[in-house]
Structures are given as structure tokens and as C-alpha cells.
Length: 326
Ligand code: TXA
Ligand code: MG
Image (tube, rainbow, N blue to C red; front, side, top):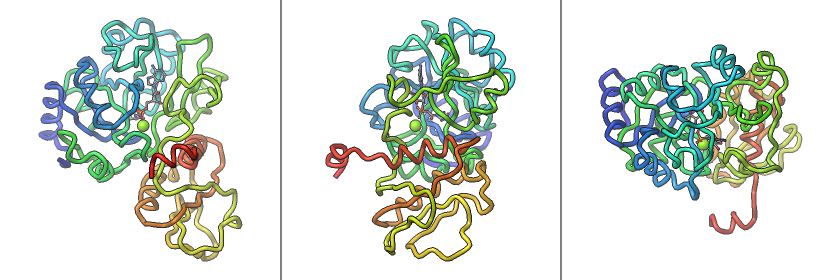
């Protein structure tokens, strides 16, 4: 059920969550699929509905700082500094977990990912539920993340209790995930808060690469993927001379492009606007029926890091996986 977020529907969502149900809700990054983080059975439903093959750790969303000591064992100075500066907002912190958090939320890890979203509907919903909310992006496993209630409806529609519609997400890519449990802060997933902003406050951050131990499924080589094969090109000159293709451009081109469908992320080449439009544009290209999608490289600064990360994962193809997807 997809309904407008109002005070009344948010309260309704709060009681569904309290009773172990699932509610999809808007955040400033992408739509989340929420369950009571302290109710292991409710959290199990998230994995069932998303079709996640393994139990990957989830982000716990809070609306008030009072919740933090109940979820974590230790909040160090770096965490406190980042929280003061960036919460509420698109920054997820991985901290040492407290025993209150069920293992299914953290996949048995000794750490827990926590964030305080800034979207008013998300905050109101969490307050109405009076409990922290575990929420992955509200999409089927490995598919494109939803930035509109309609995207959630299409992928998860009848399987969940309520979808609160809060309009399009203002950031459009998932939160930045930063681990603070090791010796040094480590970026596990580039996202809605640019790395440069974090480094301005806490200095150099180690960037976890996909070749090491995968600590975060957002680091799986194929993720956030459309069904249509996606290829990254560095300039539009590399477009094939074919009509049945979809093209995803960073900026408005100054000549006509011969393609079935052309999506422009930002007319003026603004990375923030491009991030907002990324998943919606990919959703439209994916349903357009074209044979292949060609996506133009964007500069890897600011939000460009998160955009290119998502594009690379969307373009990754493992032949054995393609066989099984047929
Ligand atoms: O913007 C977002 O973060 C959205 C909205 C709904 O808040 N949520 C989201 O959740 O993107 P999800 O489940 O799609 O991604 C969570 C990421 C995964 O890459 C997961 O591996 C990582 O956070 N994560 C969660 N707990 C972790 C932990 N304890 N250690 C390391 N990584 C963790
Ligand atoms: Mg996700």
C-alpha cells in the first residue's frame, strides 16, 4: 500500500513497526525498508522480502541521540565529532555493538552501523515507533535503489505493510558508510556525504578497496544493477552506431545523440543534481526495453565518487551470474 506521508499515516506506520511489520519510508538518500531493529523476527522479514541470499548487516536508524548508548558499547571522540557535524544526514557510522542489538541486524558482527537520517518523515516515523529502525534500501537484492515511492511499489508492492510516500529523495545515493572500529577511520562505501567533507573534519580516511576482505555488501562487485547490460564510456564519442540503446549522460550534450532514449543527469554538470537523478534515470533506462545502456563517466570528486561507484557496480558482469539470471 502506497500512501502519502501525513501525520496520520506516519502514526499508522509507527504502530505497524511496533507490531513487527515492515514499512517503507523516504530518507534524504534513498527509500528504506524498515523494521524494529530490536525485534529479530521483524528484521528477518526484511531479508525474506528483499530476497537477500545471505544475512548482510543492516543500518540501524535513530531519531534521537539518546538511542546511541543503547546500541553501541563505545562512542569514541572521532565519532562524537562526526556526529556533531553531520547528523542528522547521509553518514552511517560503524561502531562497536552493544548486546541489545540482535545478531541478525549485524550478521553476527561485533559492530553495528548507525545513522540518523535528516528526512522529516523518517525522523517522525522512528519517533512514532519509539524504537530504532533497521532499514536497508527498499529494493530487491542487487537491484536499483529506490528514490521514489513508485520504485518501491514496483519492486516490493504487495509484500510489505505500508509504503509512505514522501516524494523524491533529495540526495539520491545511499549514505556514506564509515567504520570507526579499527585503528583508523575507514570508508566502506562512498555515498551521499562526500569523502572530502569528512576529511576536512577528521583528516585522512583509509579507503577500503573491493579487493580486500569484503566488509560491506555495498562492496560486492555487482550491486545496484539494472537488468539491461550497462557499459561505462569516457566520452560520447565512444557510443556505438546503434539505435536500440539507452544513453546516460552527465551533462546536456551540444549535439543530437541518436539513441532510443537519452537521460541527462544534470544539464549544467552539477554532481549533486546528478546524484539526485541517478537511480531514477537508471530505472527509466532499464524499463525502456533497449538492448544496452551506455553511461558517461562523471568526475570522481565530491558526490562523483559515489556516482561512479554505483555505475561500476551496475556495469559489473560476471558470466556465471548472467547465466543464472536468464
Ligand atoms: O542511505 C542509506 O544508507 C540507506 C537508507 C535507507 O538509510 N540504507 C542502505 O542500506 O543503503 P543497505 O542495507 O542497502 O546498505 C547498508 C550498508 C551495506 O553495504 C552493509 O554492508 C553496510 O552498510 N553495513 C551495515 N552494517 C555494517 C557493519 N556492522 N559493518 C560493516 N558494514 C556494515
Ligand atoms: Mg542497498
